[in-house]
Image (cartoon, rainbow, N blue to C red):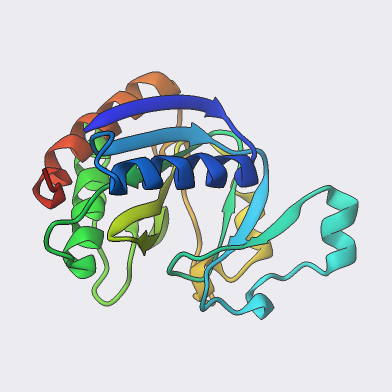
Length: 210
C-alpha cells in the first residue's frame, strides 16, 4: 500500500482526488493507496444520514463560514477540521466484505494510537474507535467498482467544540475525545500519521487484488 500525505485539502477537492485514484486503482494502474490529509472545518453527512442531527441552522453555518457536504459514504454526520488526521484508503477488494473491512480499519487505528499509550476499543454494534465511552475516531466508507473510498478521521489535537453542534454520528448523548485531551499534551501529527500508515499497511493488506 502506497501512502501519500496531502497536507490540508478542501473537502470537495479531496473528493475529486479520491475519485481520480479510485478510477486508476480500478483500472489496475496503481497499487492500493492510503491518502492522509487534514480538512478545513466542514460537516459531512453520509448517504443515509439525518440532517436533523446537525444542531446548527443554515444561517448559523453561513455566519460561521462552515459548509455541510452530503456525500456517498456510510454513516451519519461528523465534523472535520484542523488537527484531525483524515485517511482515505483506496483499496481494490478481491473478495468484497465491508464488515471485515470496517473492523480492519478499527483494528489499525486501535493499534496506531496504542503506540502513544492510549488504550482504545470498539463498541459492540457501533462503527468507530472509542476511548472510555467517547469517540476518538469516526469511520464511513463508500465503494465504487469494488474500490473503497472515503474512510476515517482520527481526532489528534483538534478543537472538540465542533462535535457539540451535532449528534455525533447520529448518536444522541455521545461525546468525542482526542488524543491530546486524553494525553494532556498535543502529539505531533507526523509520528501519528506514520503510526497510522504502518498499521493500515498491515491490517488492510488482505483486501488487495493483484
